[in-house]
Length: 145
Image 1 (cartoon, rainbow, N blue to C red):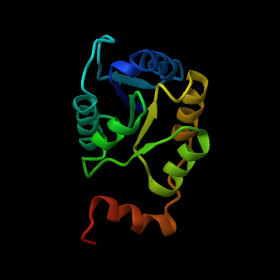
Image 2: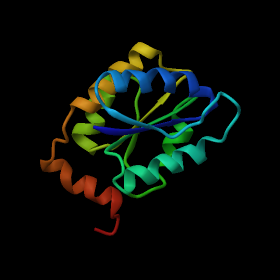
Image 3: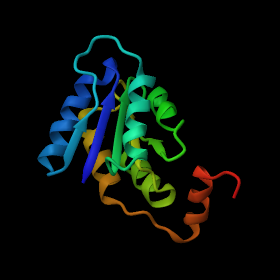
């Protein structure tokens, strides 16, 4: 799978760990930055991640910041993105199964490396459930339906 990953300075170390983990699982990973733990603004990286998900360059996105909240808001500004803030595997499963989330967000100050890996595993292995959820998901990108 083609996956993009981006963070702010607070999640720089977790981004590096998860990037290597995803590569080890055989995924193609686009690291959208930052390149160091120097202070940066999470919206810039969230918007960049959203662009490559929306245009189909990648199939999934991983967004990280200190809490996961700010960068998830930035990603979700793009109507083609459905970024779910998760903190444990069940929320990652439900984000995919019920909401067809194409991005996952986590907080480096709140989620340890092992839990973040477990969330990624759940997110990447769970298919969208379709059915009764399809119409609702369609409304997320097209509110006038």
